[in-house]
Image (cartoon, rainbow, N blue to C red):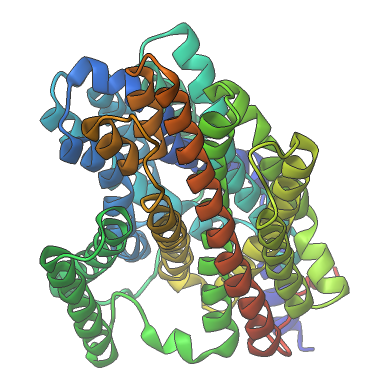
Length: 513
């Protein structure tokens, strides 16, 4: 090695002072965005009582945040590459804190929908920036793997901790408190981030392309909306039109990126087998994790009768498993191989879902806790290593765009997990026979959802109420078992695919000093 090359290598891998403090700041942002994605679920009954939204408005309040985040991630990742990731992150953090106040003090359903959408815009600036900054702060690949492991662990932990935090706050304060907790965290992020985070961007980003921004937004939001509506209400002309519009916009987006000299997202990255295999694994890892956690939340509360806080605490093994596996994923992948860790993680989630096919209303918590722990470990291994592969596959100047791909896979996986598995649960659930003596109005409400069945039964003062709840719970568990079986088949097939797609893929090693 020449002296010039040696100096360049030493510069490339010289540890940056204060990098772990900077990571702590980035992790705060990730944790908060992930918590915000799940914390509203528990607050919905209180919010409904106060703002009195219609059923459609309530769906938009719940969904608009994830719709906007998913639709803007690619755009914000590319924007960070252009204007600077630190600038975008800190601007987004200030906006996130300010809009959280708007959410907390919303006085009408319309105001709440707009506030949640604006929170999604701010959230979309945070996620790609955090992962891209890690790529630029941690030069040594082994340290970067650990940093990505911590980042991924917090993203997974946030989703599981959200119900616990929400349950605690709602037992002591009003529903707006689930948003106001964002303020001190974001203030700390901005104050420490100004001092510790380095600025980084693409030195030659090329011109901004508004048409690509619009196409990516319309495409992703259209697809996510269509999938969620299909799961919740079945096929309809509106859903088909929106889905086709989204698919057409994404097709046009891809074609346009292949012709632009400076694309918003370089589609040629997907020619890299490791990159495309990692994105697929990312998406389906989160599909399995989010689908299971979402439906077990309902199972724990509405079938086994636990409080929201108890249900949140019961799901903590998933977070513990994800954190633990995330921290050792990089080391494990270097000792064995990338494909064995990713395929093994996906396989573990698949096996855990297969176990869920055998649960009943009276299944004890030890089995449920073990299933959640295994799912968390599998997700921690797979998600962390695939994020590392995705970031390592691109030059540093394109880290924002690559991070956005990883984050978009995460958001789409979460939406598809709830929607696809949800359509199976709903399809089985709605066919349960109405017990004798139940009025037509109560039967209609009960067939909408398990929560609707519990509420409808509360208004019946004879044995028919108990019979209605029992029939609904049986149907929900039947649907959950079938959905888990389908999920298990998908995850096990993806595990096999990852074994072939990631053949020969390695994580970078650091250089000797």
